[in-house]
Length: 334
Image 1 (cartoon, rainbow, N blue to C red):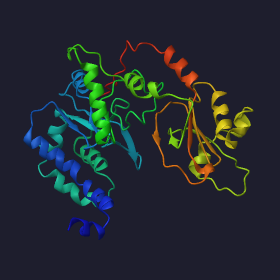
Image 2: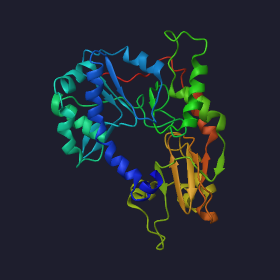
Image 3: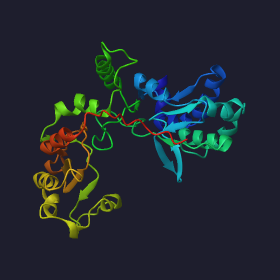
Image 4: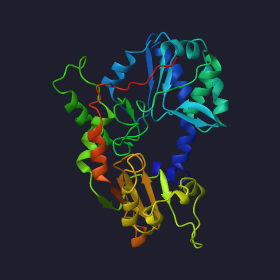
């Protein structure tokens, strides 16, 4: 019966349209059930929470102050906390938001029809009622996961409290890692688990010069043959190109092959390139290093995605980093 019903519609888009109604209702319901809690943490079903880090971090903050903490994203130039990354609201903010406004969720249901997303609507409702705006807590509140983290200067000595798009296998794997990390430690005295530690566990053992049929998520800068009259490039690709007048000799040839793309990356400093990806005349590089994911092998050889890492440069960069004696917790700017 359910299979027949699903064939008559589009469950994915229809589910998404229904999902956007939930956020304010959840806030209203949870506060009614637990009105005296210090913190309210909102996450999706595929969001992994590192609870020891979360508890240590929130213990440094004052729930008697109004807090709305998240990983900031924008719609129509309006800032809100990305729902998949998770967001956190203090007791002092929840009380005037939903505690003093019974039925507020119903009031925003009509508006939800014309908005895309529940996390965006939540932020609108919170600001309308309390004037409170989201504080940027990235990368500690994070929408990536071990295979997609852009490790480097902005993802290193930072503790992590959430990760997004985790499937059951990834959740199980990370739980084993986290359990081993804290095994034998007193949680009240244990060092927080940092992004650097996730790199050591997930990416460092798997670093290699190249992988075929693999996407390592390089997309900071593109090298394209703009003089090829038979190709039409996307605007977003062209916008990520460097001024060709600034190219060195290796960059001028980067679009020709996987090998040339790699030579261009290796000719640049660690502030510009740690890894590269190549397929069908497109060379893309990244100033951070990712694990990435396998992709289906393309039928035509030129369409196959090939990924490379400047292992020597990555190892030199990581060796120069401190032991993270100073843990980079997010700053409270309330």
